[in-house]
Length: 366
Image 1: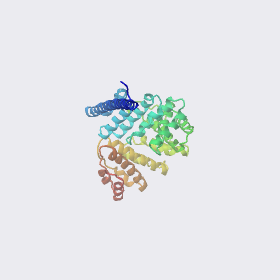
Image 2 (image 1 turned 90 degrees about the horizontal axis):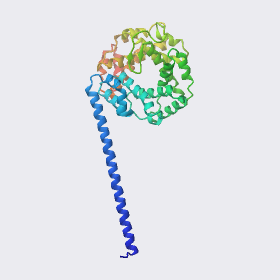
Image 3 (image 1 turned 135 degrees about the horizontal axis):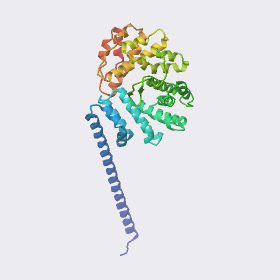
Image 4 (image 1 turned 120 degrees about the vertical axis):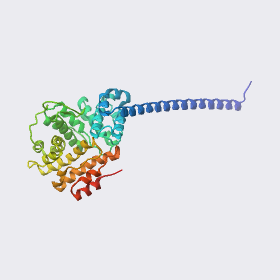
């Protein structure tokens, strides 16, 4: 049978249409299959996370003890999600959230083979800086080109979280590699050649934080306290006198991080120990600001409301305001991200009316 040119053209168009239809059907099938697999994966992940949180009365220890298995099963993003869910359900405290995400950050460096692009992402606002610090610490410890790559990392973080500081985890790592030499760790911080010079004090804070941990025989990576003599020589009856003897550029970072040594006493004693005559005015202010943060973080891990220390009422206005504002910042974080903590009993327990009003003006109840 002979076909006219017009008939042949119609046949070719018909064949092309059928082929295109077949391709579209194939693509739809693949897309549905991929979507189904993704939904199955997400569903399985969510079930695992919910079971993990609901079945264990000691979620923090469970997550920490099974950490390697959790990373293998959920990956980095899934592990971050697990920690966030545990915090939102009030089954781990703020400090435990920080410890766990710090561990995830350390693991991310190995999990992604040092690929900075994969390690950085939008992880919300819950304790995410601790993940950042863990990543930074691993780069400082294991990357031979750490100065260059830390700057790349900081640039990436600032694209996701504009204005965020960098290098706190680096300071921890620097002191970890020279645990008895804070001077060397600080000089390494100063040697960071970076576009982000404003972040260098964060490196100082990380180093002093690690120093404080070691004075207290505390492992910040695991949240474990060790018995026995401290691994560092720190013979200061009043810890912040040590800070006052340093170069001025290091002092604020030192005050804020070594106040944790003072906080180990009962809160009334801690407040008194922030106000000894040996301390400068600036020293006392930063000490009180940090105490407010530590007091709220520590006690809100155990209950939904706390009372203000009675010792506050005898302090100067600026010290009281710094303590109160720091404590309320912790309440506000819980109100925004997790099970609500009630700040009103804290505010109402303040002895001075002006402090009660100031306290309530800061509380962002949601």
